[in-house]
Structures are given as C-alpha cells and as structure tokens.
Length: 141
Image (cartoon, rainbow, N blue to C red; front, side):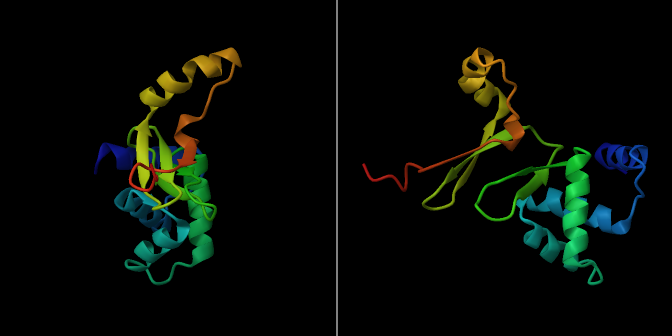
C-alpha cells in the first residue's frame, strides 16, 4: 500500500467518513485520468463497477474535493474538471480556439501575480485559477 493511499484513508476516516470501494474507485479514476470531468470519471469507474451511478460520482467528487484529496478547476463553461491533489499545485491556461490546456506551476503564478496580490492584500487560490485566451497556434498574427 502506497503512502498516498494511506494518507487518503487516514484523511477520510479522520473526517468521519467511511472508506468505500466507490470512493476508492473515483479517486483512482481521477489520478489515472489527470484532468477529468465527472462524466469522464463515471466512464472510467464503470469499467470496474457497473453498479455505481452518476449521482454517486458527483457526491464522491464533492467530498474528495472538500477533503483536499482532489482539486477542481473550471476549464470549460460546462462541468468542473477534477485532478489529483497529490501532484504539484498549478493553474491552467486554456485556449478558447483549440481547447489546449497548459499547466502553470504555482511558483510561476506567484511570480506573475505576487505583487498585484500584495497590493490588494489578497491570497489567490492558485490551484483553482484558470486563464482563458488564445494559444500561439490559434492566434492570427
């Protein structure tokens, strides 16, 4: 059993929640898929358990997000996208043209926004930040 699985189990139990196979499947799906919508997580989980329903997926994603085991970002105007909290914290640049997503490390975002945040005495949630724009391939120069 890996350290990340142990910390997941401990955090879940410490918060008063049960360790269920469905929760484990949802967390494993998010970690495997990288960035995934609830529908993509549902499709992945259904490969391993046909008895799980979409509402269980949504509730489980919300719980895992609240516990800090996964993070969500709004990379489209539709459903949030979930990704593992075990990797580095990052923001996202999303191209409105081709939908390409670029992960930007927290350090880079802090360097870019730090002075502005300090001016307003504000602490940004860098892991939730998404900046929409146009990538070099889609930009007409």
